[in-house]
Image 1 (tube, one colour):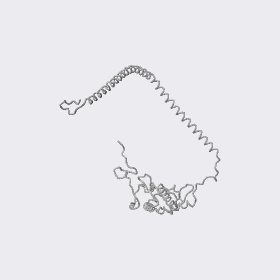
Image 2 (cartoon, helix red, strand yellow):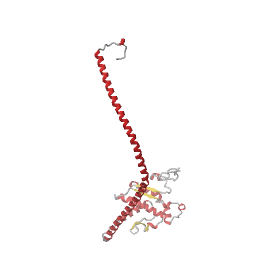
Image 3 (cartoon, helix red, strand yellow):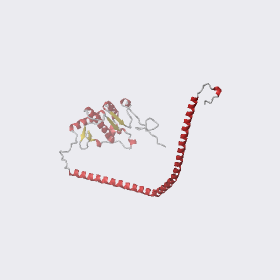
Image 4 (cartoon, helix red, strand yellow):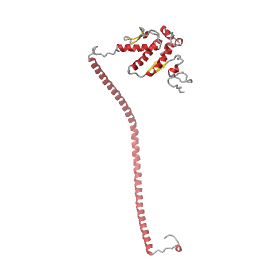
Length: 296
């Protein structure tokens, strides 16, 4: 049973052991025979199903061909219907927008009629936007102090014109001065407002930006406009030096930014931070914003 030759057998097997082995082999043969029969049955069923599928496949291909033909016939109709739907939706949106505008118009007309029906307020009920006279006087004195610190020429009697809503310096309206003088007095107004608010604990943004306040020191040839008499008188003073010195002395009140294009005092480095814009992309800082070369 093990395949060894008789002379190599060292174990003695009795008849009973041989019978057991034979019975086990017979059982295994019966099992294999039964499974072989089941396998033959399964193969037969699959062959039958395969024939049926081949038959159905032919019929299904005919149905598919019919459906594809119907789809080809319906495709133009579907395209036309889709286009028509798009047109209808466009008209719908246009009509809806028109209705919204009509409703808005109706609402505005109704609101207009309601406002027209309201009784006008009397002069006594209207709010008063004027500034108290004492406040105006105190602020004008602060402006005068600033101009004195800058060594602005004149007696520097500053007042406020309620009609023009602007300053008057030594009885002259600010707007009647030359452009350079107006620039200085405008800057004095801003600086005085910072000082006035800080002294009285009033709200203030905390920074002041002065754009070309020393315009009177411009070159009249390059600017192509001659200096007026008051500008020429101002230019002959030392206001420029005192201007920067005073701003440096009050820098604790807030940040002051001066944008100017004039020759600066020699001691300007000790008075504040200086940033020079060269306008040349190859020399120092080009400008306030970084220089960006055009794409080629």
